[in-house]
Image (cartoon, rainbow, N blue to C red; front, side, top):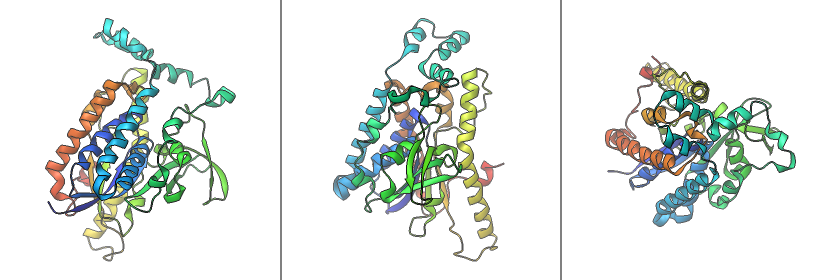
Length: 349
């Protein structure tokens, strides 16, 4: 197949970012596919940093191999964060009744943390506060992550003061920027960064509140038209959640998809104007949207699995990501550079 260029937009979603790990591994198998730019939020920012660092360090010869190694290292480190697995032995004793499963859900580490954060702030820990992601993020190769070589890289965070998305790029990206992108405010203290755009020290929270992931950095004229979005927060869920944890998780999914849906609606609006000749040719970029997702497996995953990165969960998501990317390439690889593979009009009906 002839060489084609794409932009990647990588969603955030905690441990479910292992799905994106699998997607990226499969895309790296295709030598004809060149990644021109990456936009990432939260787990998407971590995946994007690992991906770019490997591509830059290895160059044309070894870049894809080193990118795979970086992604494997990243998720091995994420798995080590999860030291408590309270639910495992209980689930083995009572594997099937709904009420027992709900009881298990209540006493998993994620549910325990959820209850505690309703009354305890991360600021209450005083000098003992530690962000568990810091030991991972600080080990990224920032000379490669921030390099002008390889794909352009954009990281999204939310400015606490203004509520607006802040996109970091180039030399602005450091460990603080990536930690800010993954900063859930009920778990972690806001990350403070001097922002040259405002001339102030600003506090930042998770980018998912304002751009999950932001697409607009990928509209640059020198980037290809095609944006491949890797989603890990299900758009569609036919099941109405009834447990407290399930309800909270669906609220989270809806809110973290809202910014992406707004951008997709704007793209569809521009595409209609261009198709109807109501905009002069060249005024706006005619973006082609593609999506790699698996809402079925995401809806099957327990609501607390974003917070409990066990080996089994990460492995299952990685495999699902590889399979989803394989389906995308088989069904829509030929569309890249030619046409969108997502009907945005149908998406909003």
